[in-house]
Length: 633
Image (cartoon, rainbow, N blue to C red; front, side, top):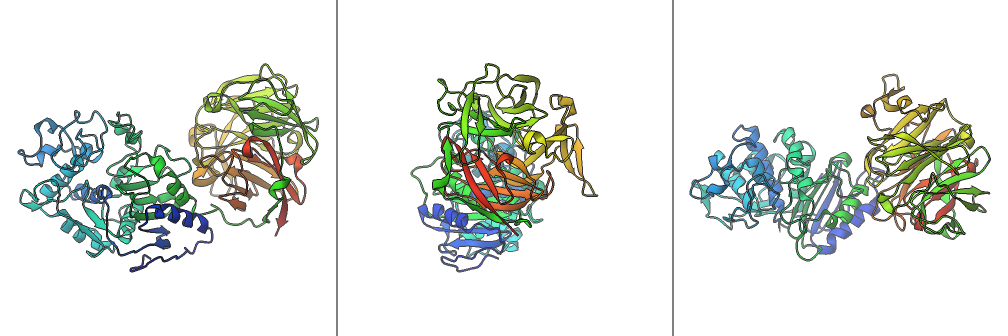
């Protein structure tokens, strides 16, 4: 549990999977502005720093603290979000032109008020734009004060704070600084600012919301407050440079990552955010709460979530590997970096297929292929790779029907390849969402399906079953993808589809993994809407490949951990399972490899042996191959 009076305590959580290096990175990022902080995993202190008793001026984190009073008032039946603020506020104070404004609009920065916390003017008609404001939330605080006829500080200590372990020495709510001291004869408090607290109290407020209100405020209110609100998401933002896309990731007095604005961070993440970067961060899917207060780690103020991205990503990585150690593999011992074989500089992607003629066929993106390079950069180009993993040669293959142009997301690119019955098949991404193509002449000419996978499957990749699919477990061909529409977004889960090997081109023949039944057997559905994940790691499931390893009869999943630019720095995980749908365990996991892992990784079956794997990856934009010696249990 949280401990009082701790100064520079480091207490590591009991979970074996906790990545201490990421905990310490999060701490070090927070300490750019000095101050104090605490990170909780499973409700227990994983790491704490600074003076845990010191009270900090939380500035706009007060808004999120104030949201507790709103949830309480809704639960008590005193207000609803649709109530007009003018119905509970003094007519001589609340501006007549704001009369239509609702409590919902005051709580979502859509009431139209200017920023200052006093009697700020109305800048826009209520409900027409998102404009960050202290005045609006302060009117909300006034309304709740009038409805309760009580000082909100006293109310919250009595009804909530005392129940979750927050004492008056832990949190103080100063008098209103911008309006008269009382409203309707009751002491006035601010939501725009005014709360002073220590990081232990902040973390307990985070736990309150993590646990759905703990019966003190409605769980339904917590859900609404901490997620994007469709009615708000499409409103224009009054100051888009300072608050980019803010309407898409703000709930009721809480910020959130529901729109995926911060890559590599679970979408269920939400946080308070005040001047000087006072933060309460909650990641429900990871059972994680972090609180931080001190000085800001940048000049000025902006609510661009990218400012917080490094800190949030470090927090998201603290749980470490998402699955327990493999019962079969004891680990992988990688060759030193100087033994990595790199060719075809400037290209990436590199899915591959082991064809019936014995060669590997591959596709590259945003590059020129192997030497001699093609004259014009391609978003989708093809090559034939012959030889072993350390002495291979690559030959570019030109295809008028297969090649595509366009940089990055603007160009169609390969995400998966396989060979079945002498035919090469390719999944192309960036194609609304994915499109199938096939070649009967070893990648020289391609035919394209007239249909697409248009829901999920943003970066599909075939399960590799040996040469020309010879090691297939059954009559099906399997396809995996992170469960999002775009190859550039991370997801909470990895999804799986299958199709009979002789019907790959027929969209109607595809089925989607729909979960495990009571007898532990997989279920399948013709509807993509019924899909269920086969692998989960909230916010961190990114481009993946799966290969079958015959010597161990295990399926090996290689998955990049999303990051800022994994071509040059980042990590990945290798997981194994007895079946294509799991259950998964961890073979190897690192948040930061000794070289950049690139944007994709795979284990070509052609280069597998009983005691070694060779990882094909796109680090530094090369066709890169690195040997890993297998250690078995």
